[in-house]
Length: 67
Image (tube, rainbow, N blue to C red; front, side, top):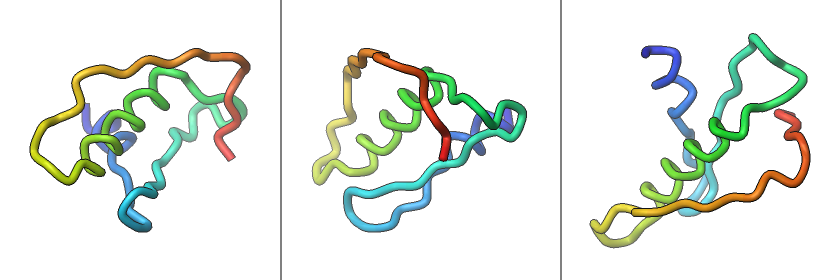
């Protein structure tokens, strides 16, 4: 559980820009669910009001590169 929380921790660069981490177990590819979860966390932290995001929809067109 601690590793999951570490992956979902995002560093804020400015109001709408965040940088996340990638687990070192699989350095060549990234897991789409991880990207979705990080995007959801970033969306929640970007809102100016207190209403949390309620939905997220994505289309995985090709494999992700963690770099």
